[in-house]
Image (tube, rainbow, N blue to C red; front, side):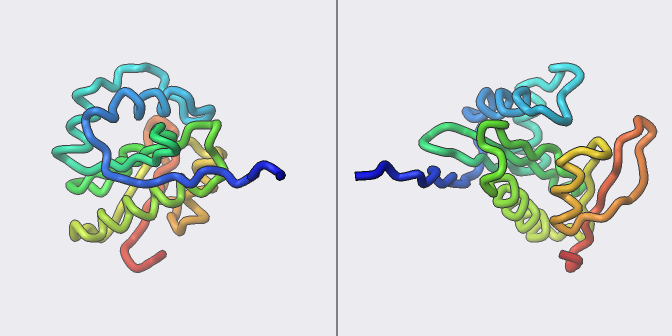
Length: 150
């Protein structure tokens, strides 16, 4: 009998404080949009997933392989990352769509994020319907998504 070549399917669920170490491991593993400093603390994650917004994780066989966090107050996409070993399987898009739907349910009309220009992340967001909205003073590309434009 031939072994199955099917890849495991990720399950999405809300992120909890206990997920923070795994989320941070994913964040530090990415090849693009790397943190220039590891100054993001557990408290930053806690604030982002429990107070100012909400987070989701993608799990494969109990392992966190991606996560997304959106800010319900500002409409900012705080984070959306997939571990390099799990890229190209649609996990990022599932996280994106879940987060965006939740942010719309919070009454927001416009979402925004920043990313490095010329990266795969830029292409990902453009394919998802985001539009360029200028450049930050640090040279990052700002993208926006208006409700009903997807």
